Image 1 (cartoon, rainbow, N blue to C red):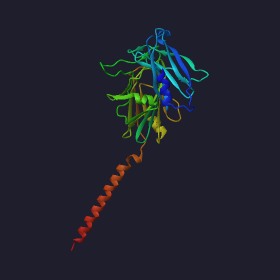
Image 2: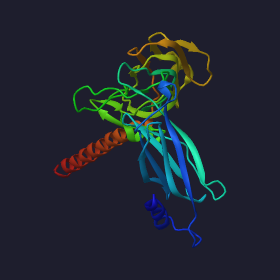
Image 3: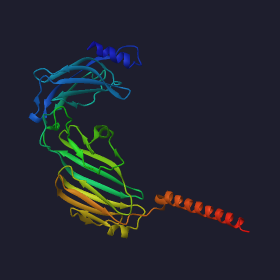
Image 4: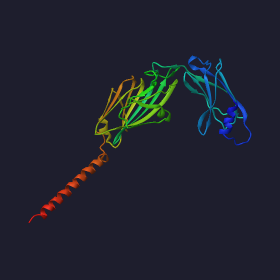
Length: 326
């Protein structure tokens, strides 16, 4: 572990000339899918924060009792450490640690889990959809609380040898202009394949929130939004917000299927549902969309220009005809 001291001394210059006290991080890797049984021969990595990024500082493997130890670590509160274990190709970060001269040694437990490839255990506990009916587009924001209720990590299975595993797909309309994820992590891990947003993110046990917004083109005065549900869904709330439109007229122009229960709301049109299945298709039909003069300003300007050109040509022709008369 001497090279770790050298790395931290070079990369993270100390404010004081003397080296810090040598500390240690020890611990055990346990498998929560098997009643916290010790995991032998698991890969364990120790990272240290440098300029806000965790870089690899040292690696080791657990012994037959699942134990590991990193020695000769600078015990200085300036350094933030992050141990983590890899099991069945999935990395599980542990807790972040600071060592001090008063407490130079820390013992940690890093839990890992078995993996499952099929079938998917994921389900949506709550799904909120807000459809904003704007002048020139339809803006949809979806917030999903996704739960993995089993004790193993869901990793999926590639559809073909050497292919990419899919743990979740988002079946949003394929003609979306752009999509933005609230969490940068998900934004980097979703890709567009065959007009579907898919990810291979491993889903550990527990709940995660996934929120994203996409924009759809909306030409004309009517619009239909279709959205197949990706997972079994316990609770669904859907709201349609009309910007710049008369609400009484807009309310009468919204129809939903499968039949959703309308709820009282003074600001928008809202529906709720429960116990929906994966594959159920939500459909919202928007009629009497707000008319925006700005949406047609370009075409109006072109039409006025053509009229002006026609009038000018007509006048010039009339002047030439009157000038040639005897």
